[in-house]
Amino acid sequence: MNKKTITVKRLPKDPGPAAWNQVLTQVPGYPELERDIQADWLIIGGGFTGLAAARRLAQLVGDERIVLLGAAQLANGPAGRNSGFMIDLPHELNSETYAGAHEQDLQQIRLNRAAIAFAAGMAQEYAMDAKVFDPCGKTTAAGSDKGIAHIESYRKHLDALGEPYEMRSPTEMKSWTGSDFYRLGLYTSGAVMIQPAAFIRQAANGLSNQVDIYENSPALEITQGDVHLVKTPKGQVRAKNIILAVNGHIQSFGFYPRQLLHVFTYASMTRALSQDEIKRLGGVSDWGILPADPMGTTVRRFSDYRGSGDRIVIRNHATLNQSIEANTSNMKRAARLQDQSFANRFPMLEGVEMEHRWGGRLCLSWNSMPAFGEVETRIWSACCQNGLGTVKGTLAGMMAAEQAVLGQSELLSLFLNHQQPKQLPPEPFLSLGANMTMRWKEWQAGIEL
Image (tube, rainbow, N blue to C red; front, side, top):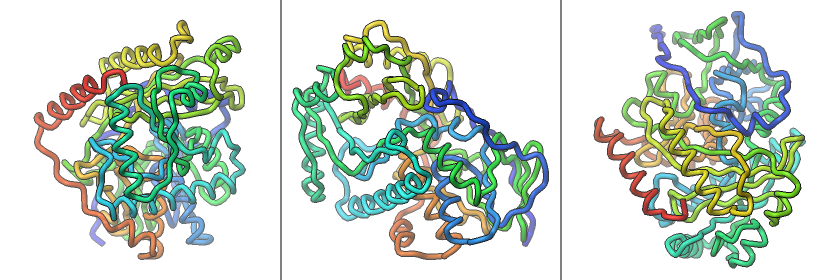
């Protein structure tokens, strides 16, 4: 094979702390790669995709050596920054409507549920408790007439798909959340709520007797050959096969130019609530709400897990940052919006401060298609999760391992029934237009934001 060197042009940057990881008890991690090693399989990326790929490879290749490189500490990147919903039903962040193509939606539901089942297998095998992996379903909720109209559209879509659901009245929403804000809810049972950082940590720990894991070891360069050579700051890996599980960072390796959208979403997490504040709030101790309006606010309340305390997470606001870096003004605007959203929903918690604020990287494509497949000889991409990293990342990792080892499988054939990501409009029109559109939609969302 002719040798070709890929130089990684930038490393990931994440604003603010990965709060889901910060609230956990800090434990010794994995070593930094500081020597030269050999592997049959190298996975670059230690999030949901990378760990799913590692587990599926371990199931398929027996005693072959598997190595996983994380650019930072596991659960400190995007995996520790999402809202922790594993959603089985169609849910596109860049869609303005719930209506989709019937057969494609049924296909996506089947794939999503396969990924959730795979994650459930990890949860069972690695003895995760219900506060880490909770198959409790999800509720989509509205606090305005416009939001209620979105729920009605969603209800009709579920009817067409033959999917069951339950409607929740204002009284039921109040009893559940403690908040008077929500006027209607729609509950579906197939989703799972996770503590994302704890899931990543415990999955890695469970895999560590089959997979060699290195943290703070970003890939800086790949020289292709009969055996690929991957350099990190202090070491290198010679590997026959590579799976790139780096989501939007795949562009830093030179793949999928002008095909991927880099979106940041932002969130805030309260300090631990006092017993008096918990009593004033009322409701149940663990729940999550997805907004009926696509630009609305996601809210989670979670109870104490190993000393983390009872807390509330507010997530809203999105920006397109094709540099793959969010700036200070993005964070400040998000903080203002989230403080107002919190006050609108929880006036009984006036005075409760936000302890953590952060931004998380998403990767979307114009046509909601993944960046998946063999991009060079024995180098596979399992990237562009279109905003649903917990489920679609898990799925992509599974499928990359199956494509690399098996070549084909029934689930892989179903997964591969998609197009490539479309080319994007040119700059500056792309970024200006996308960010103006998102600000307009936020304004239109009204109190749903």
